[in-house]
Length: 443
Image 1 (cartoon, rainbow, N blue to C red):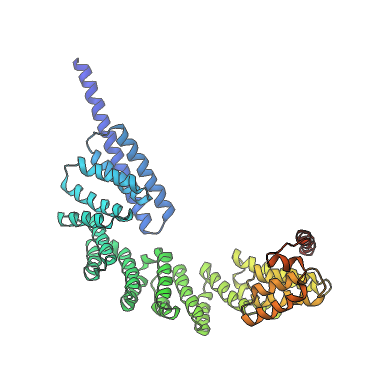
Image 2: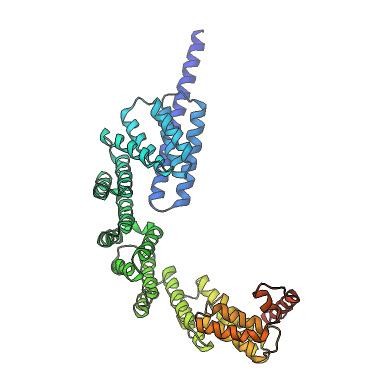
């Protein structure tokens, strides 16, 4: 090769090396962005960034699989695939990275993420062996914290609780940014172990950490698990400090409403209403959600049109919210169809369907279906109205009484179809009913 050729070859080699490390730098930056988004609960953004990392690192590795820095490229590729759930590909990339690297610190980090991958693949023994090998090797920062967090989960799920709780503390000590993840793990494991005091303490810590608000849905899911483990009353008690949480207003309102729902389910309707009204006084989505919740409780008990109309003042202050607008529209339709019913009884049927399907007011819907059925017991659609009343009735005795009334319609296509028999004329009746209801709704 001439000197000129050698020089050109050297430049090309240098440029290839620069391109490789530039790819590595950009991929690391994208991975860090993805991690911040993931921890902030921005799942869509995190997913997009992880996919960017996969694309860049996979392309770089295919172009130069034996290049300097290939171990780090594969390490990034493996972690990104782990985060996106491509677990088998993640394992292959991580194990190849471990095979070719000569960097002992990088190998220790690889072992942590290999352990995370094996855990998600269901190989808990392999995961524990991998992380146990990694942790004594001088890890720092996020990798060390991830390792302790993984070992905590594996130990606790293996009923070795004492060591597991300590591992959670060590994860936070290694990286304070892991505090929320560690407390969420502690909360979940506390519920699993039936340790109510530990769960209360963990949830209180989460509510005092503003960044935990970004994990609201996960925390609400765990509170629901606590309700299933103990009771709605106990779960509501865990959220007793929700009124003083340091979360921002929208998330604070939503967690307070979670407590209101639990109190209501437990039968403490007065306390539930007090909590919900406290949120309803605020602005934004949480305030509207509180008004919708209060309205739903009222509608669920409404026995007549006047009781349903009394929901309007609750909703109107949040009328610009689309969900509130839909409910107000349903109330308008209810009044309009019921008004038609005084002259054309089928209006009661249309109003009953609104009460059942759009207002979720079963008691009111039952009354309206019966009002239609009682107008003309000989009407072909009277048995359909009775069947609909049975579906929304919550009382065993009431359902039995309504079933008794159906005996007078034993030959009705609706009753025959409901009992699994042949029902000649059923489709024609249904088509005619929809035509007539459509005429009422179009007025």
